[in-house]
Length: 357
Image 1 (cartoon, rainbow, N blue to C red):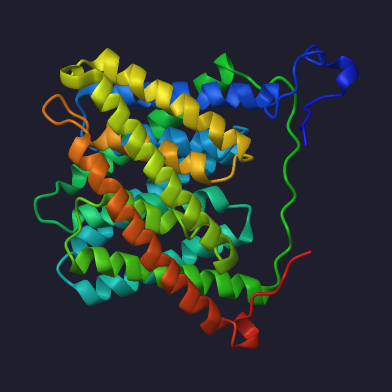
Image 2: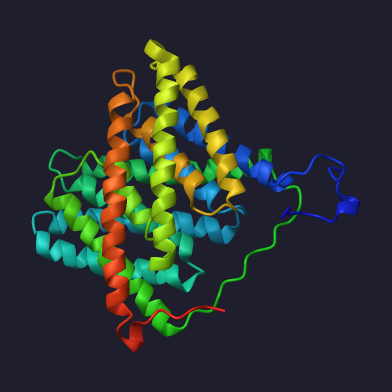
């Protein structure tokens, strides 16, 4: 069914060919693609480390949040401060104590997933979970400069907010958006979601620590993003979308690499390839209703490939091929854990997942 941002009688595009994308959607597509491009360029021109923070954060802020409000900005910046403090405390006080560190991380995850399940702080919790999982994995290795990664996260977050504000000025919405209604969740559903997501996220953290999977950043992020629906019914579909999106994103990265051949180290060429790929995936993302599905998976995959792994000395071929295999494995194992936890929690009335509406 076609969506409309305004009545047909007042819409200047009313006589145009039917489209599933509204004018607001087209503006959001441009905001996402140009926002990722700006973050990527800032990181590469300044020669900063951890390009993931500069390329992926615009995808999260511009792709998942169509309206930039003061409440959204406060959540995003608060997540930066909270993650920075937690990373410094965990790395400084528990870096050589795996059991206490795991218990502390589990408690932090429980708090963050509780913020997500309550709804009004979903962005804060989601951003913290993603950033924290990445940073805690990196800082667990002795060769990682803790202050460098914390600084990169902070600078990347601040720059992302500035980029988002600029994009909303250059490509503003044409008509006001109606905020979605949040369903009221019973307490049993909230307990179910918090316990399930916390347990699986902690298992993911432990697995990446035990098996020394430092180079599997996409797989680690995928294992967290799959949990965002906070239940088995949504996670199964999210896992499928994530795997397909990663496959498409890796193939797009390889196609750009083959097209550029030996010119991948020319920044304008690489930047244009990233922008064009993000433009296509952003359109797919909006056609899916702006949910974190296949298009969003392709966006984050391209942002990670170009932001973190593409350098003048290193192309994308190996990383793109490795990314999909690691993500597929991570998604399958995560869904297996979610399935087991779902059926275990459904055995008890206090944690049984009830249908909404």
